[in-house]
Amino acid sequence: MRKIIGLFVLMAGLLVAVAASSANFAYFEADRDVHIAVVPDDTELIDLRPLQPYAYINDNGMLVIDLSHNNPNWQEGFGEDISPDSTYVFEEVFGVSNDLWEQTPICMHLTYSGNEGVLFFVGDYTNTTVGSTSLYFTVMPGEVVKIGMILNGFNYSAGDEINGQAQFYAEAGECD
Image 1: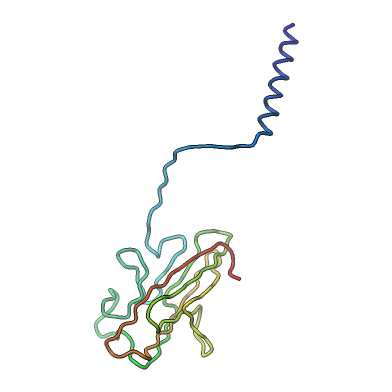
Image 2 (image 1 turned 135 degrees about the vertical axis):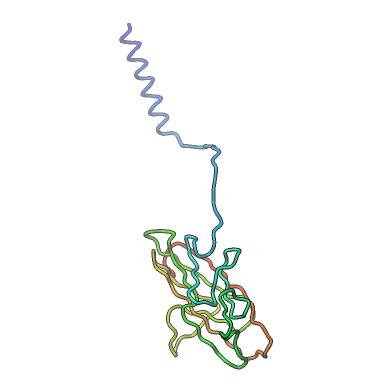
């Protein structure tokens, strides 16, 4: 009799195990702490690095490009700003790195909005380089892509300012 009861309990246990393994999981709830630090542009996982003295990280941790005497890197005797009716090309103003994923490239989209006269480009400048207010570029893991700027002073007079904002958007994978 004990053997029959034991066999019945074993069969019931197997039936419960089979039924439980074929069930669809529907719900789970848990409370967990989340700790995310807000860090400066030059220490985050997608890193914006100043590469020239006129690019720096401000007190709020944001990348700033400033050619005026308001730049904390500006030194007496150095030039500042740009001249009317002139074009300036600055290579390697800042870099964008990919320290987020070890095996995954990221597609960066850089857009500029603001006054006319600011264009960005990737890499070195050549006579055929055409800057843009909207760039797409791929950043491979561990790589730093260097971004340059073309500043156009045409249509501006002495005392005018060129102000704008650069927006950065990253997606996993290479750009098309």
